[in-house]
Image (cartoon, rainbow, N blue to C red; front, side, top):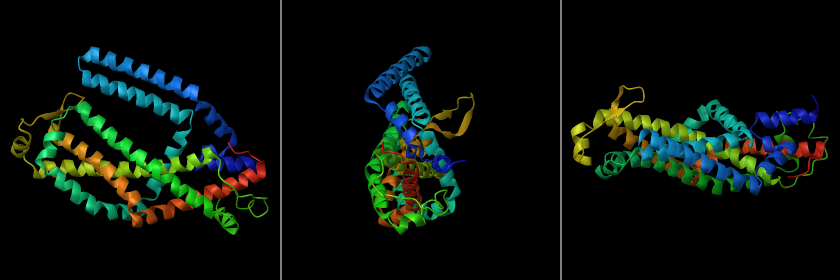
Length: 323
């Protein structure tokens, strides 16, 4: 295997497909304005068609809307995962998160105390139950999706700053040190490495890697808090209290297989709503809290510096032009 092949394989294993010149050019073509406009129009048409079909079949407009949105999101995810190679980044982020749970738990314990204090107070608040328990299932899932979109937008604004700061630090001897443990370790000292700005797609790749890594952490936290709310609500909040708060009889949560699970529909909806809100709260606090940022990005910056250094060697050896 040539040096170029070894470096490209390393990029792929570390969730960095856009660091390879040919793949970055392919992605750039798939992100052309005309293709994106045509794609969005096609996905919207398919989503609307699926939503109308489901609505007419089961006679429920809410399920039709959810089905249309689900079809749109699923097809968009397939496009991003296959053609834009984002599936590679997600797989790396999942492996990294579960491979470093020992580092994740101390980070979460910094945010969890205040987070639990805030959301537990909301959980025993009658107004929250009136809003979350009585909203339609369609509005519930759309609200959770809105929280996720806001959190994603917030990260996309803040994470490029971290990438730029790391990029400026990888110079001189530091570049050689960052290549240790990579296929570029033996190549860096003898290569004519010219450190410059990363190509825009390579920089975007680093931002996406950080985004997916943070998203996996937030997802784990959200699922854990959902389980906490379900258990706490089932043990501490009796049905008469829920009825007094909402002014409506407590309803069971029907499952799709025809039986019933041992939690009420009201509790399920409130747990989903507050867990999604907690994910947004944690995302904002994780990026703005200086101690958490320092702990999280100390580990992440090592990965980023290594990627920047190996890419500099890759370009020096193979004369890959920026894209």
